[in-house]
Image (cartoon, rainbow, N blue to C red; front, side, top):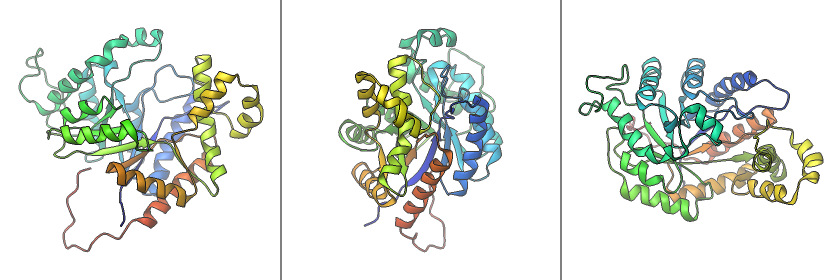
Length: 352
């Protein structure tokens, strides 16, 4: 029995040591063109503010550049952090994107705020703004659907968004799955092992899903790091730069640019404190890595357990060539395991 699923990409425009952030943004656009050629379904970009190791701070702007440089792949955000923005402005931005690139734009939204007091003050939000996410999501939906006057703003319209329906995705942890269900949105949830709380949240999302103007049926996208290489050791090494950066950020307060795995393993790991080494080891866990056979088997098991419709790959690494090779191997291997579609005179309808 075959289990089929779509494969997509989230790129966070990670910077590399001794490179300008502008190069990371240009590389994101070029990477989108490459994964489009590999047959991936979506390409998403993210929102981070005042993070030295991440250049992607304006996702709708970057999504426009990606969409203009590609022709087939769906383009979206993973995601726009709704507490940082007025829902009207977010609706207008996605209305413009959906108007310029009809049928290709996804609206992925999250509830995070800046991770330091300074960033939150600069954005004009407080840490507890995350608690208003569901209300903001409801207001955003009204700007698109025009369902009654979006009070308290009578006579105001979000142009050109009103009447458009870019597919809505909610980036959620286990608790946020209920918000996605009540909104009638697709669910994006991390945890490629598909066990425990994550699997339970997916079941709860499906059980509580309310059909909406955005989607008639539940849709689940599992997100996380996937690394594929000729050997298991080589695949694991692809995960080293991001794991080190995460451990460094939690012990030094700064999320740094990526460094080569060889430098990290040869020089930086031996000098780590016990706490930092523990965080580094933890950051290497919970991902899928290995040969094509290893990863395809693991993904098939994940999809079988959770019923995920799609897998969003978020892997970052210093070595761009090795990273692209990982995505190429993954695309080739998963296509090889999928059955041929049944012959039909008419294409089956599908929701993006």
